[in-house]
Length: 164
Image 1 (tube, rainbow, N blue to C red):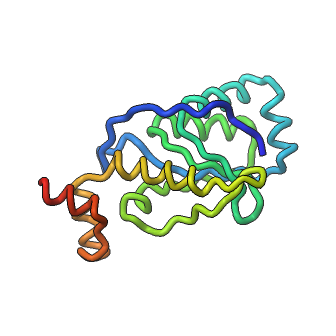
Image 2: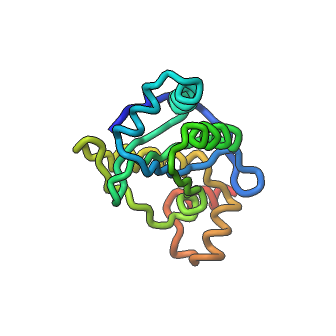
């Protein structure tokens, strides 16, 4: 696996739905590690932009079920567009899945992944939980009740509702 640089945790003001500024996305690059490293170590403007973007957001890297390099990251819409542009410019075969709603509605998300043989499930859980804590609000909780029922609420959800 390759490393994107030091992780930086930034403070964000986050609100959900049409007002959301932050997203949690899963990016998968379907290339071999050698192909990825070759492009990233090339020193091209595209590789430097990619590295710069990832050095300024929260990222947890892992190998997915198919053995491809994936990473979960928290970013705003603008940074997501920049990230996608940089991946396209590097000619990577990739996919991006926005898992923001899954996280905020407490849907099951697989976190049992490894990076170079190291279990990163706790890092993934920490990122998911931090994103949830920073972005949950009454509107989301009401959406969760509407779609999944009141029994789906966590203790944190109940506390937020009781303070409303």
